[in-house]
Image (cartoon, rainbow, N blue to C red; front, side, top):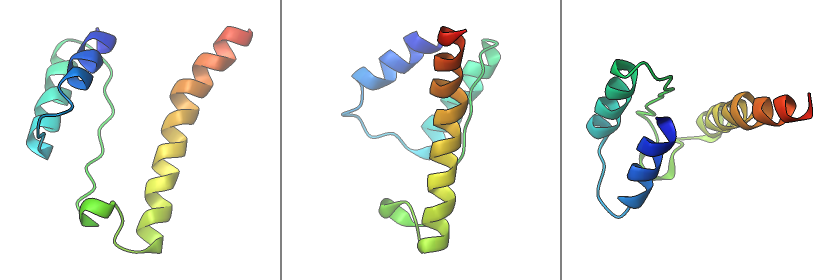
Length: 79
């Protein structure tokens, strides 16, 4: 399950993961019939944003992800 793969990745957080590792993991998750969202930011280097416009875009991605995942789960719990 996703939780199992996520936990395994979290346990190995001290290891160096490249974008290629992320692409392979998402591919494997899709092969297992799991939902996996993936966005590869090719700009900005280690800071994650090359300029304020890119930073705003990345923040929008983060907030939309939280809204769709955590927000949807919270809404389901209230129903």
